Image (tube, helix red, strand yellow):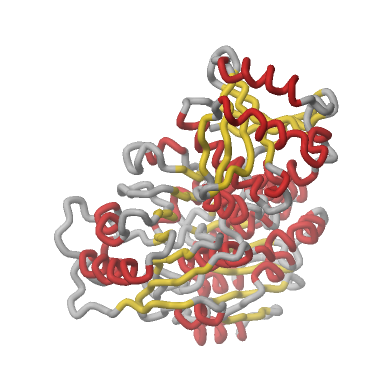
Length: 514
């Protein structure tokens, strides 16, 4: 059954476009699964309301406050001023809409909002997902996403409820599907390790006009005149005319693009990027595009340090000015060995499948798990045997009902096995088995869906739901064995965050570390 997702997110000259862009990406993936999305936002200078509407989503515009005041707060968030209003008023307006419409989910992507706003704005019975980058304030979240490199799960200890599902790291980066589509072509281009085109992009706003500073520096750098430049500015960037004028004075081919809607193509056609450590950093990584990295805002510093530590970019250190920083970095990246190394590290860090994984985890909340009981034996036998499903299991032989029920009776009593029934609403749709090792730290997972539930896309969500349950019982990791010809199962495990770690006895072994 489709769900309704509400997004509370803003864009503006003071906060940029990145929050809205990644929410639009998630909304697109949800829409592809049949879900509905509505955006609640303010009309700040530089807002993206038209962009949101042009992509087919409803928008609820929250009125601008008469007085810019965050209001009383026991621990004001560092970025409270980004709300441009009182958090209580914002929560009350949001709550009125939520009470009237009753969506299934609220997704919040806003540095100025924390648990106090969330408790006031989101009614009981509506699930809450939070997208964050900072780990600097508490959240009342059912699911938390922080897609940044260098972030650890325990960074949110004490900031989210114990049962919150935490999706941490670039494996969950929210990238539009065109980046996955452009990835093979882009990675082939990187093999040449030759720089013919440099892409310059400082995000949707570039409030300090770093773009013009970069053009100044490149104009004074010993760079082959054969290398062309592509400059991308946001549609609301305040310095577009100045950047165009500066580009026109350069003795090389420079193209300035405002409001590009084909970033994947532009990145795939570039050989190097000079860019900020914001959300586009993950797009560049997915396409294996080496970057000279600038910290354009303080909240980008942690991500920049982690990306550089992973060898996926070269940091531009501005101690002696931008020109000296570029002069020092260019020879490094012109070295073919260094270039290929950085490109490979980029591609390994981000695989462009993150939004699909996040969508899978959101879908998992509709799925229930209950402990199997003596009455479930025949249902579980049907899940394994109907439609010759047994062909995909490690023991690829059919089992008689009598033999199965004897095994089932023993399994229910075993302390090393957990048998669960999967249900959606009032309907049982499958079964999950966890075979736990003697240390109690890891388990092998086995999933069987009822015949009518196969081919519906439910498998990935069941896996994600099982991961949530595995965390609750204190497991450290879970493994799965999948036959190579069972492509659907293999994809379902990968979409849930599992990684292939090897093969044994003709089976692919996949692992998820909790």
